[in-house]
Each structure stands twice: as structure tokens, then as C-alpha cells.
Image (tube, rainbow, N blue to C red; front, side):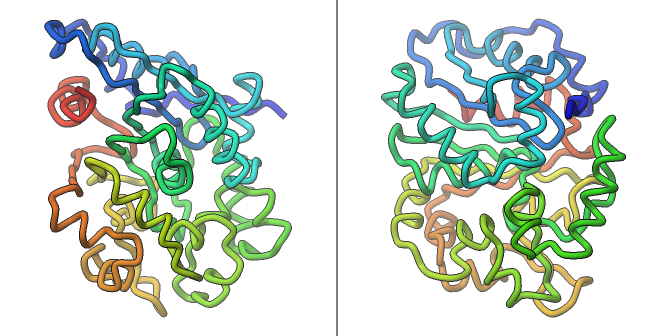
Length: 304
């Protein structure tokens, strides 16, 4: 089944990719960049990931940019963003990165929307080659509890997904075959979430404490999280800064710093925060909406 890639990543904003002065013209050393797209998108959509790749290559001459394709074609890549087990996707990417000689000395990573939490799983599970900086652009680090608006031309599919999530997100069938179910975080069914979530509950240390996950994540130089102030796609929006809804209800939210995850430091985020490794940025727009000027000023410095 073919699913149209959505051009909503920065919509009209990202189309403003006019040439500008490069920030790294005088540098002979560049760190490679790995990009992971979001739901309904693909590695090479000229209106989204293709534009990002081109822009970074213009701003940082000589940089190697790998925009991840999950599968053997753009159609497969797009479909896999909905239906391929996230743990299998992460393993697929781990192997791809390990076999790429251009990444052997390390790389920076930038994930858009769900690609943000998927790349964090790479940082935690796959320390070789080493990830230096992780940039999560609208990533749902604590998952989602709602799918209020669907991107681009995939709204009919998202309507179907929403029904599946509401009726049985933690059933084995839905968990195994629906990507969004694997980061569905129901604060009203916390026990079910912790027991049955195949992906998010694992990488967020909800069941057992994996010291390797913690060690590997703390090895990052910077973990940058971007929140979109007018986001109509991600619910709750605070998940983009690793916050979430307080357990047992679905109205009041809490920040990362107020969460048990932070207070018990199960992922090392408190130590990273104190060391200045966590960076919280915001963009005054809808989901993944930003200008080239904003990108250059706010995110490009972490790629140099």
C-alpha cells in the first residue's frame, strides 16, 4: 500500500531555502550528520528531508549527510513509518550505521518528530559508531496520548490509526504492527503501558534499569530538544521537552524535571542537565514549522 509522503515539514517555511552564507567555509573538518524523518514522510521527499539535506550541505560544505531510508524504496520507507516494528527499525539502522565507513569516527544525529525518539534509541542501544550530538526536532520523548491532527495527505490513515489506538493500543497485535502504538503512553493505564509497550517503556527505563542505556545516553555531548509552541499534531506538546501528563489523569502536565524519570535519574538526564548537556529550544510555529533563518541560528551550531 502506497502512502503519500507529507510535505508539511515546515510547509511553506522550509521552502524558503534560499542560499545564505555558509558558517563552516573555513573548516576542513566536518562531523557527519544522520537524519531520521517523521511519520508519513520519507528519506528523500524534496519538500522535507531532501530540502533539509540540501540546506545543511550548503551551510556546511563537505559535510556527509545520511538521510535514513528504512527499507529498499521510498514507498517502503514511508509505509514502515506506520507499520514496521520500531525495535526492528532501530536494529536495521544500527547495522546500517555500523557498516558506513564515513561514520566510524562519530556523527551528529537529527530526528524529526517520531524520528527524534527513534534516534535516542540508537544512542542508547548502539554506541558504535558514537553519536556526538542528538537533536530531537518535535520528537515525542515521553510518547503521545492523542493524535489530534494528521500530517498532509495521510489523514484517512491516521483516522484508522486513532481508532486502533483508542480501542487497544496495548494488545499484542496492535503493538507489534502499528508504530504509533509503540510510543502510545496512556496515563490512565500506567500499568498496561509499562507492561505491554514494546518500545517506549523500554527505552525510558519503565520496567527495569538498564545501566548500559544510561551510560550510552550520558555519553552524548549535547541532547537538544525542540518544542513547537503552536503544535497541533503532538499531544501533549510537553513531550517534546521530555515532559508528560501526570500519571492517573489526562489534563495536568509535568515537566521533565518534575518527573519520576528525572528525580530517580533512570536515564541520566538529571546528571546531563546539571552538566549543561540538555538544551531546550522552542519554535513559534506548528509541528515542524520553521524558517531557514531559525534553523541556521538555533540548530546549525550543534552540527559544526
